[in-house]
Length: 185
Length: 220
Figure 1 (spheres, helix red, strand yellow):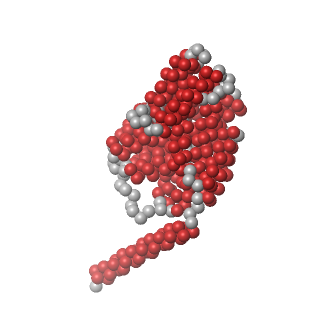
Figure 2 (cartoon, rainbow over the protein chains, first blue to last red):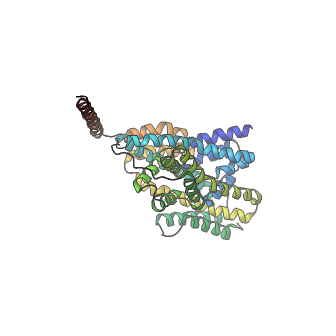
Figure 3 (cartoon, rainbow over the protein chains, first blue to last red):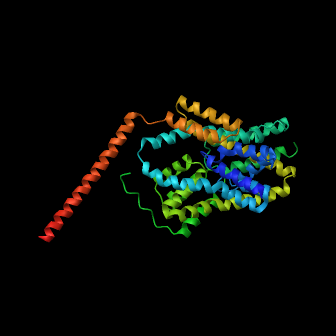
């Protein structure tokens, strides 16, 4: 019961702090589930994040797996609600006001001001996941070289906008390379 | 603000839910917003390009996931609160069930080294995706030196110290201040608003006068 309450509190707060998308709150989510509450290991958190990338839809649905891991089926359902309901309610309200300020120079100021925050937060999300998934000092040199190579190739392919390559294929390709190169390491 | 909002097409709640359920169940590999655009603007023609961009812009600015936020805005625009709920649930449910099943399988096989190897590769690829998205967005949005004064503390406070509240509560007001509209821009906007209100008042007076004339005519 206590676990359910802390799960709901944590994810409802993260919902409202997710400026610019879910990546923004990955560092705090990882810190609280791995560090503060010790519900998961850093490896498990990353594995669950990776599972989320294999599923369709918004890329943070994996929070439901964290909820299940901590508190079973009720945890899975309540975490999902806690993570989506607050921000969805907020955006519904803002959507009504936003049109009202069309043409206002302040509206543009808010949008431009949020951009560097969003990017700083996304960078911190990349860092939070990357230092377990891409560069991990607990793993062998060979393991690290492989994961760094996968990350860099995927980054380059997305930036170069290789046409007709679905992002899902890049993820699956990463999994295939991982299976091939990392089984024995 | 002057134009009446474009008329929302008549879409049944079931159809709305169905389309979002389809997008939620087929949008593999991230960039869900691109799938949404394809279905809502190109296929269903429920919105025009500008309306969709406006929804995405709000979704980006307000906390929460951009795709889910955009779904709430579009659902709300088409069918009010019920539409917003239908869109958000449709968008989220298939992926949540999918990842839940993967989670059950993971709980079963997590000690298997082959599963671990696949997930290591998937994780490294996922980092590549968010890194590329971040770099692309950074190249597009970061234009002046003041942006770095905001960006670097946001990264340090959240990335190193894991406190998401600070950038939201402290940096947002500073960042908006850095980007505040120039006095002349604001003055122009206010003048435009004032002239709009004056026009409106004039129009009201005109209508009232016409009414008075009509009443006087019919009573004489």
